Length: 551
Image (tube, rainbow, N blue to C red; front, side):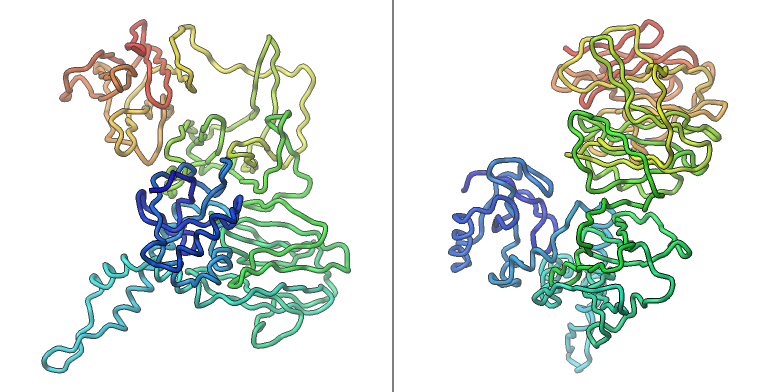
């Protein structure tokens, strides 16, 4: 068995997940390419029995790796065999993801392949019976068979569409034609030309008196899906589609050449010489205002994400914390909650919004040696608006606002509430919530799948107000508890590894409650609840009563 190395968690050809302990071949085509490994891979392919390689551990589960040896590209042996060795590297460039796709997109792609392949199997497999009648396999059986052939199907489909890539060069003084291709259930632009032909039958742009001053391109993790030319008299309507990004190119200069980068199946992107626009989930208005959270290390964000602010349909906000803020999400009723699965080991901070409640100030604060600073200050209007954020090294470091609010010297900002109590903490991120329980009527505990701990509580009050303590994920809420004025709520605590306390169970005084807890705290519909928590433990203070601290 070879030494553990860092590999991608998906096959570089079919882009399906590689199971832990699965036998794979490993290439280093994009990251710190090693000639020695490339030669080893070539020689191993000469003998099918020897070319499989057991990977004991995947250290970096992502698209990039900071380790010295770089990130190896894992491939199913059957996918490499279908792709053919001389074509495998170029086919990987056509199927690779330029950024991590959403969980919803992964489910959509898998279901699309299952539907297509099972339909082909049902139509293509016929079993003659004794009476010479042809019997088709039932759809359920075809789908089971298709489940086992997805990697073969994905690689075969890509290999059948691939051809040596050619660069596209077009100008705006002539009509622009394009070719569209359907790949894995999506439509992409595969090539562009200034001349109509069988290879370019679709009209994309015709010169007119209304000269376009902007080119908007839309792309996803696989390539270019749309190109729109616009002028001030005809602005396109943009929608925010998950997993897609818009770029805006300035066409005010007349003698521009637009280049198309092909991967052999579709165009990856369009470029204009001298321009490198940022990708936005929705194009912003002109003249956005940028603010940097870390002034000492600004970095450049390649993509800016929009989230809604003060939309009447918003029910709350969630902030993803992974050593720093990594994501902000605005919740609406009936939404897809699969985004929680993108970073299952990070922490989520949920902030419910009441009907008519508005955000009036947004800023990040930091303090040291008696000094305070506020960065990224914004005062949103009391109507629906947008705020953009960009990540650098996985953390939000850039904010963009569609207004020109100016910070005043000596401006006062409200300090966050801190606890008057002190507790012993470990060297890990701790979070703190505090709220008054007067008027409490409903509690919804949160327990993530497979976890024995209750991570947090979503609280409903008689006046319609909602609040939360601890970590609350809307995809992991349990059965609600109805609370009356005379009823008590009991929290039962246990320890992880004999050291770290956590809430193991919650019940009302009128319901059945387990026994054997290391401590118990009783709550009423009154008084102040304080909740300290980290990724593995929590500590509760209520009206002078304390749960046990770390052992």
